[in-house]
Amino acid sequence: MWDDHQAMDLLANSLFMLVALMVIYAAGQWALSLPVLPLKTVSVSGNSGNGKLQHVTREQIESAVRSEFIGSFLTLDLNVMRHAFGKLPWVRVASVRRHWPQNLEVTLEEHVALARWGSNALVNTHGETFNAASDEILPVFDGPAGTSHDMARQYAVFTELLRPLQQRIERMNLSPRRAWRVHLDNGTILELGRQQMESRLARYALVYDYSIAQLNRPLSYVDLRYPDGFAVRTEVIPRVKTSR
Image (tube, rainbow, N blue to C red; front, side, top):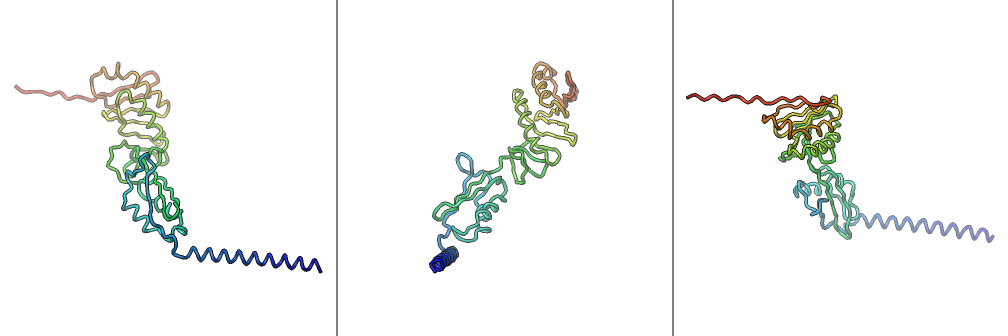
């Protein structure tokens, strides 16, 4: 008989706990459905030192909030908002979090344009391609699909090697056979080939002042693929005749 009472007490306690949990859950769902804690402010900043955004506009931010904001401070789906901000032009990464009691904090990492990818896209400093409008004067990368990371990495190396000559890269070409060609801002084309591109360009920079520059003529083409030297093609300067 004692065992029967103990079993009944255990069953009663279990039922009580189950009912209590159901009541708490129902109350929580009801509370969340109420229009309590409405969202008051959405603060948006960049992840740069001063927190300012360089490209994303206020209108774009407001449009993203209007199109995707559903619910209150507690029920708002942060993943949906993060995706909405992440789709904006120039946004690389968006982070969204609640700030008690009624604020939403959004931090946007913007792309930093490094170059143009052909004529239709841009390349950021991570070597990623993205679509956005820009009036900035940028070098052009022209290569097979999926090579933007390699081209961004080589651009950084080539730029550093050319820095002592104060020559700037205007365009880089990477062929399907992985051959590199560099167009400089002075009109010269450098043929680097598929191997030892960095050592070839370093040799060009090393001998430029006391060999190439001594030609005193604009260069149109330099082939650096030779093991012990290079071939140079100069621009033809037309002769000017004057009549007396």
